[in-house]
Length: 496
Image (cartoon, rainbow, N blue to C red; front, side, top):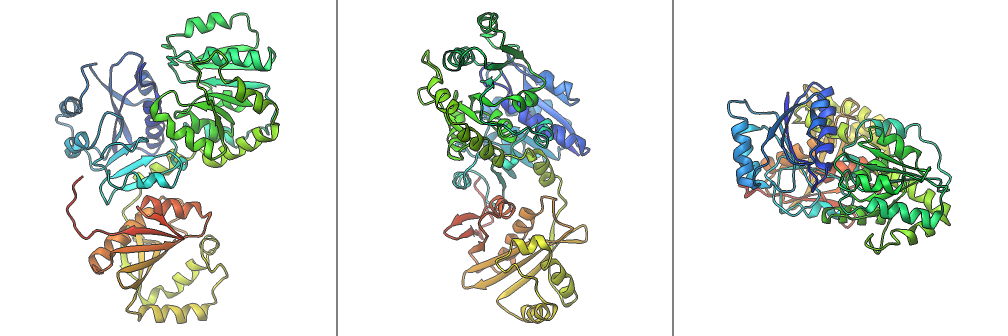
């Protein structure tokens, strides 16, 4: 299989788009996918990282940028190439017009976004920003049948982060080492302001690690400023970022993609939005209790002094922040997305009499019972009576989901007027393969074909059942009271 990535990096935009695409590309490559990157040759780019990872890079000139010009340049670069299996685009400047032009060159278009401010003509949409309300912002921006992957569980991190997470030391809440990171460029020289605030607030003994990229414009000035500070260390193009985060007791920095790396390692943070696209991240992290934000920004000589003083005197608060951060991100986002993209096709068939015993065994699996409103094991005779009644019930549809001829899940639709209530679970063969949302999407399509009078589907999900909530959200269900609801459209035409 072949995947094409379209992302850029530069002094102005930083390297976050390219780095998260690289995390996904490296994961896909381990599963046999050949990955190619298309990137502009812009000052301050990190295109060398693509080649260093073993992927092909097609660099385009740094011409004046526009959606139309970029689409034309990409089509020229791909002239004569057969369609890719996946086109993965992570770029704020590209929208549905670009994606529609590239449609002939990809079987599946994946859009990575965190702004929710433009339309996408995509098959899969990824936004790792926390918050259930986030999903609704895309409803009018993407096709109705697009799969959506929302929340930090899909954060794209390098494998060293989840690996270190498993061996993390227990933090005590004492601030003995601080990591400063405002991105590879730090055009505003926030790093130096923060270092001065640490020294003025916490004294000279606290160890400070500062990370910057080679092209950071204030790198030399910062190096000169800290040259006589034996406990301050500047790391340029750090290759051991995960280790630096694991060693720190507190991080101070920007609210960009690095936020999810910090969270994976349970690192509490003082953060600020140094770009408009970071504001949602900052708000979500603060709301989750994983970070505090710099209220006055860093335009003042004091920097984050007030926040430092408050946290230094509240070790219990620091510990709680780290625990909240670790709950947000487990570092397996790239694996989850790869599993979704590489999943085999799911087909549905009506249940038949010979499925009775299999359904009984699947229903009594511990994972299924834990997620059910009726968690007790079901006796065989009770199940058989229920199953026979179900097959003869005109207001109930019982479907088996299969992949490569193997049963991977079960769907039950109870019909009442224009509404269907769905119950779904995976079989042991379906767990861990990213098939939950695919099963639900196939069920929606089946209902639209076979029960055209149904206009909405409702699901009752136990609070705290994160995997089920993620699967239903990916299948475009939205929370409404105690239910998750999917509104159906029987108009096949799409405007996206």
